Amino acid sequence: MKGLAANDLWTRAKQGDGPTVKVRRLREAVGGQRGSAIMEFAFVLPLLLLLTFGIVEFSRAWLIVNTLSHAAREAVRLAATTAALKGNDPAVVSKAQGILAAAGVKSASVTNTTPSGAPPSVTVTTTVNFAFLTGIGPLLNFSFAGTIPLTSSATMRYER
Image 1: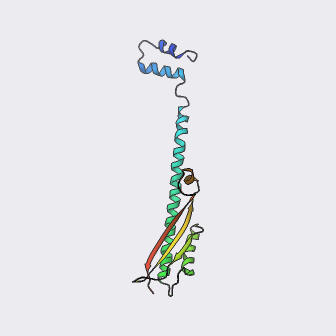
Image 2: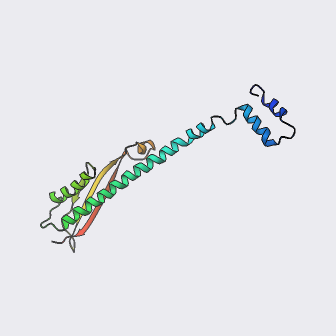
Image 3: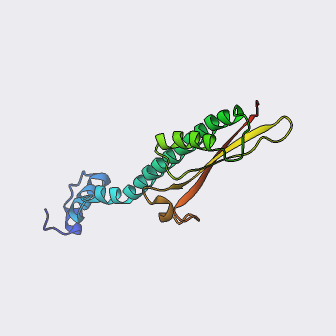
């Protein structure tokens, strides 16, 4: 059957064959659907990888934001109870830096304000530049150069 032309196959179909059987026999002669699965996979794979890497990068960024938030809350609690607090107090900064280092967040900046306002309050701000691991940000031509600044801050009433 392989050597027959498509028209020969169509004419050799049995008289009682319906159009479905004729089309199936015609497809078998022309080449059928051999290789169509690999072509479909080749079209879907880039989208699947893009979605997977996007989920991974978003999850990493979300984890880092939560870690920054935790470090800011712990540091502002220390700042709120520290007597004679100064701006960028070393104890407050080292408290937040210790939490961030334990979580694997490197090169984060931590700042705190002096008590101000009525009633007085203090604010601790943590910031880090999030770098992509998979390179998906620059691949999609986002408007940034491969890093995103992530910031978190916490404010508490000054208790001293």
